[in-house]
Length: 394
Ligand SMILES: *Cc1c(COP(=O)(O)O)cnc(C)c1O
Image (cartoon, rainbow, N blue to C red; front, side, top):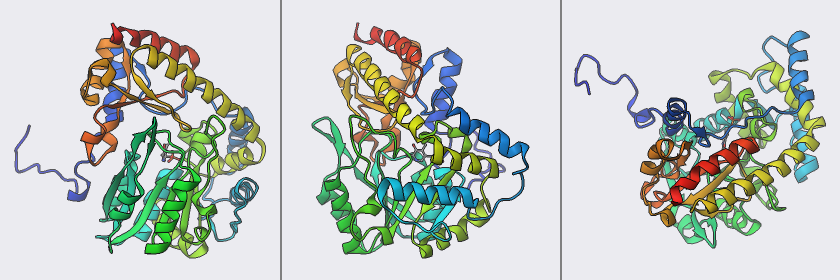
């Protein structure tokens, strides 16, 4: 390691510790070793054909200049109609909806807009990696409340959540369906969260990118639908997971006008606006391709079952997810305790790449025995991966 004082780390202090992500490391390992990559959560099949065609048509027909800052009117209207039809939530496309560069920008802009330096933001760990980075960029502090398996399902202790709130707490980030545990928060859990938000005056920032990808009839309930929550919730979603277009980076925020204005004030100087062709295509998808999404959900449920069965046969303890792309496994029945070590060895051992869940924690020791596998892959890819993993149990 270089100690040359002429080349100090140019990165600002608050972003150190956010170097290369585990996804980069594990995907590089997959390429080096030819292992099957069940690490990163992106699908290996395309979204609905008519939506892809709509994007191409949008480019060919001239939707190539800056769209309006809040997003193209077609998409804001489609999001508004979708929220009303699915959840009974009314958002005015003229001031309560903002289109963003994926959910990632929506989260970053929301935290930057709503949190002062020194404020605290609660998030459930394990948490999606961009939360900690966005909170650090804002100079705020992430306070993690741990989800733990209870009868095979990750959940939180309401007393722990209450105890995490301090006079500095400004917001709570709520991701349901939850990546990386697959938990879909129940109405009881959401009622606990809603009660605390109201008691302590917190803003809820909800990450609902997996809103349509739930299984076994589990219902996704937006926090904003609970009594008293619409006015204090920034509801975030995105097209990437819903339509298998993670490369399109098209997301949106729904919230009361003052919150949207605050977030837009930041967003306009991050990116000004979001790409026009994708917005028109996603508007088309929300209007015409929700049956395709229902098909995707059914297909993913089958893939989940396929992967779970294979992982069980290989000797893992499997925690059944009710949503998202991911299965959590407990590696202790295989005689392992350190998921980071196991996932680094796994390409050589078995020709498979997975993600150590501990990287999603502020308290990594609480997640060291969990490993995450993605099932948003072709059936033959899942089958080959589970066949390879059988060597572990031998
Ligand atoms: C994929 C993902 C995102 C990012 O969504 P984009 O629209 O691609 O920015 C945000 N949150 C969670 C939990 C995700 O899994």
